[in-house]
Length: 417
Image 1 (tube, helix red, strand yellow):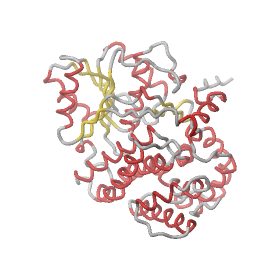
Image 2 (tube, rainbow, N blue to C red; image 1 turned 90 degrees about the horizontal axis):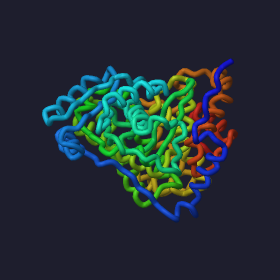
Image 3 (cartoon, helix red, strand yellow; image 1 turned 45 degrees about the horizontal axis):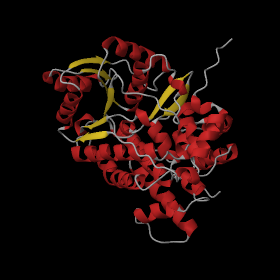
Image 4 (cartoon, rainbow, N blue to C red; image 1 turned 90 degrees about the vertical axis):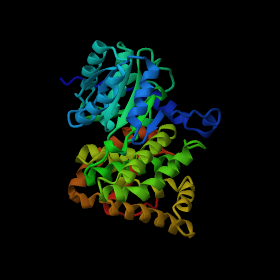
């Protein structure tokens, strides 16, 4: 008999109802919270980090969380910290998709080393792993599956958290969100206390990233920023960040894809990803993330490629309850037109850009046959509906909504329902 997977906080029906209620404008009007890390950006970012760590303790113990591929960059960070008297240990056990078992391994290392600072060096997986390892280090008896965004965690009693991203996409260095995998299913959690204390943005860390990975991670940032701007959780703090991130992605992602050594483009894309992370971390992702999570899991498609694919298809869906897409179209310089025509123009603008950088824009072009797609459509819908991101959608989602969105994305049709 297979052991049943324990429920995460966001899976409990009552908690899902609470999350939906928290998104109501009457509730959000009572208070606005905005959480971001201290950001150290540019070619001197590592030197600034050295000073920041010295502010924690004259001789701090620093645990670097990374993976084996990125370990050389982690060694570089360690080399920058040790001359100032800091004791640094590197744990390179991070794996893609972050299995929950890995968190326990990393937490054991942290308990033995007793760091004052936990520093993630890597992509989204390394940063997500570091967040959960940090929770287990701070609260050894606490089940991180039960992180409740409505209750304090009480972190930072033992250590602070820093993140040095090596990709420009997830924006995890600026958010309180983390995604882990349990029994083959991606599970997400979020809490404002999980926002790192420091984000270290060194453009050299992303130089030479392969063109396809550069494109896919950049599309992830674009999806974050777009979803945050269209979200009903958006506010006066998140809107400028989201729009600036969108501007930077449209301007610099093609350059970064074309030339891995273009450090200006790399630096701008790092800023775009961080801005987008801060925007959606304080607002919300769009339903494209629920669609992308489900699709990426079942068909093995990179997260950034998946959410980038679905982003344009959410425009028509959300337009039924909001005209925010008009403001986005204005910002992008699209000419005035009747509502339906302008919505189609916005859809085409995103689709054309995604094609320009080499991202997929339909499900069919990925080589997925219609019979295979149809056979797995019920499971896709089930996974998308169960995703915690679905609770944050401006327009309430249903199984039928998601079924039709997947079908429209298969054929590449602008959404009109």
